[in-house]
Length: 248
Figure 1: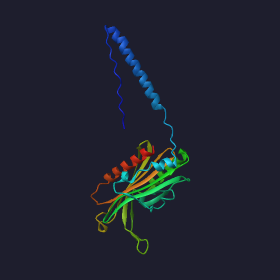
Figure 2: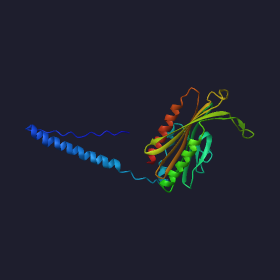
Figure 3: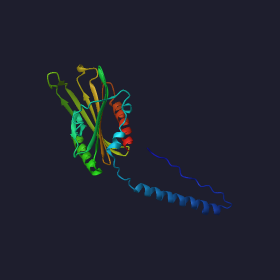
Figure 4: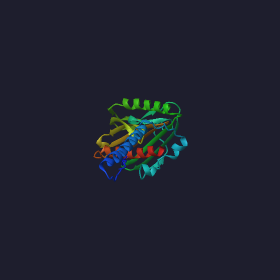
C-alpha cells in the first residue's frame, strides 16, 4: 500500500525581498536535501531476513471463521498433508525437500448437491532462509511443469470408488503479497454437464516464502458453469493475505 507523506511547508515573514530569498528559501531547500538523503539511505538499507518459530506460526493460524463463515476443521485427507506434501496441480503432491517442521490442516463445508469452501493448508518451518528458498525453487519447478491443459478419462478406483472424466486447465502467476514471494497456480476442473449442475471446480494453489517459512495452500469451490473463476481467486487472495500478515 502506498504511503503518502506530506512535506513540511516553511513560511517566512520578511521585511525585504532579499532576506526572504536568501534566508527562508535557502533553509527550505536545505531541509529538502536532508530529507531526500535520509529517504535514499532508508531505501537502500535492506530489511533483515526474518526467522519464525514453530510456536509463533501455530499461534498465527487464521481462525476458521476468517477463512469462510461456515468452515470447520476436518481430519486431514489430502494426500501428503501430514508428510510435508504440498498440494499440486490436478490433485497431485509436491514433496518438500529436507525435513521441515510442518503444520497441516484441512477446513471445509459440505452441502448436498454442491460443496462450499474447501481450504487445505501446509506450512513448513525450515532451520533457515536458504533451506526455505530451496524448497520454493522445487515448488516453482513443479508448478511450471504442470500442463496448461489435460484431459483425464474416468476410471474405476475400487468396488465403490471411481473418478469422473474431466479436463483441467492451468495457469501460473508470480508476484509478492505482504512482503512474501508468491506463486499461484490457478486450475479450472470441468466435468461433463451430465454429471451435475455444479460441474466446475476452481482450484487456487498458492505458495509463498519469507525467511525460513514456506506456506502452501489450496482454496477451492465447486460451482455452476456460470460462476466466474475470478470471484474464487479473489476470495483465495483475501484469505492468503490475512494469513501471511498474521505470520509476519
